[in-house]
Image (cartoon, rainbow, N blue to C red):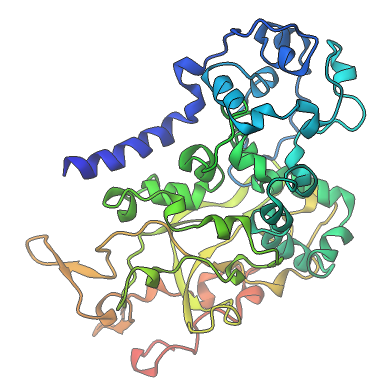
Amino acid sequence: MKKLLLLFVIPLFSFFIGCTEDKEDDQPTDTTNKEVASCEGCHTNYAHLKAVYTPDPPSTGGGGCGGETPHVEPYDRVFMGGSGYADFKSDIHGKIPCTACHNGVDKTADKTVAHSGDFMKKPTSDAIAKCGSCHPDIASKSENNIHQGWGQKSMVCLRAGVGNVPEGFDALTQVMKDGYNTNCGKCHATCGDCHVNRPKAGGGGLYQSHSFFKTPNMVDHCTTCHTSRGGHAYFGVGAGTVPDVHLTEAGYNCMSCHTKHEIHGDGVMYDQRYKYPELPKCTNCHSNINNCHSQDYNNCGSCHIGSEEGARIHSYQGFKIGMNPIKDTKTTYKFALLRQSLMAPDSWQNYGIPNLVNFDVRPTYKYTTPHGIIKITSRTGHKDTNGNWIVNSNCTEGCHIKKNSDGSYTNKELYLFDSDCLSWEKPANTGIVVDGKLPASWQVN
C-alpha cells in the first residue's frame, strides 16, 4: 500500500507545483562569467539578459482552450544557467555551435546584430533542415505528425467551407489563420517543445537551461498541453474523480502507452488523430472487457475564440453514449463514448467569420478515449445495502436502458438523444443521436 501511495503522490505533487525547472538549484545564478560578446556569454549572464531583454507585446486576450498561459519573463525563458547548463555542455548538442542551429551572428555583444538575418528563435520549426542531418527519419516525418494539429485544423477548415487540410488551411483568410495560431496552435508542438523547451502552454522558453531530454516529462511537457482531459482525468483533478488506476497501481507515465513512434509519426498526414494505425488499445493488455471503466470525463463547448466571453458551455464532468461518429475509422463499434466539443457556428466571429458556413459537417460531440480509468464505476458495479461494491454480471445492469414500472427510465441519461442537444447543435448531431436506433426491448424509441 505504501508503494502504491508513493506512486500517486509524486506525480500529483509535481502536477500542482508546476515545472520541475523551478527547483532551487536551477534558480538564476550567473556562474559562467563569460564575456557577453557571444551567444553563450550573453545567455549565461542573467544580469545582462535583464538589461537588454525585449518586453513581450501586450496580450491580445483570448488564450484559447485552457485559458491564458502562465507568464514567464523573456529573460527567464532564454537564460542558460543553473545545473541544466552543465548537463547541456556535456551533451552532444552542447558541442554544436549556436549559429549552426539558430543562425544569426556569434561573437558580438550587439543583440540586434546577433539576432539579424536568418536568425531562428525555434530551429525545430524547420526540423528537416535543423534536425535532419542527425535524426533524418524522425525529422522527415515530423511535419505531418499528430502534434501538428491536422485534425483540429481539418475541423476548422471543413466547417469554414474551404475544403480539407492541408490546402484548406492555406485557403483560410490570414486573419483566421492568425486567430488559429494564437488560440488553438499554442499546444501544437515542434521537436523542441518536447525535448528542449517548456511547451508554449506552460509559458514557453528553455525548460532546463537548454538541456536536451530524450524522454519528455509527463507533467512538464505532456500534461501541460493535454490538461483538461488527459491530465485532469489521469491525476483525478476533475470534480468527483480519483486518479486513474494505471497511475496509482502501475505508476504509468504517458510514454508507457503512447510510444515514440506514435508521437513522431509515420510521415502520413492524418486529418483525424484516430486514423493513426499505432494508437494504443486497451486490448493490448486486457481481454474480455465488456464494461465501461471510465469515470465521468471533462467536457466543454461553444467557446468564443479570442473573446473574453470564453465558453458559453463551461467545463463539466460527464459523457454520453451515441452512435459512432467515426465509423469509417473505428469500424467495429456501432456505439461510442462521446464528449462535447468546443466549437459553435459563431466561434470565429472575432476573426471575421460571423457564422461558419458549413458548421453542420461535423457533430458537436466527438469520439473520445478517457484517461480516468478505475476498476469499479457506476456502470461496472453497484453498491449493496451495506455500501459495498458488487461487480455487475453484464452490461444490462450498468449501461442498458430499462423502463421502470412508473414510466421512468434507468440509464437513459447515459445516452445522447436529440433532446439533449441545443437548438444550434441539432443539425450537426443528426447522425449520432440514438433516437430510433436503440433496441425495441428498451421501450425508449
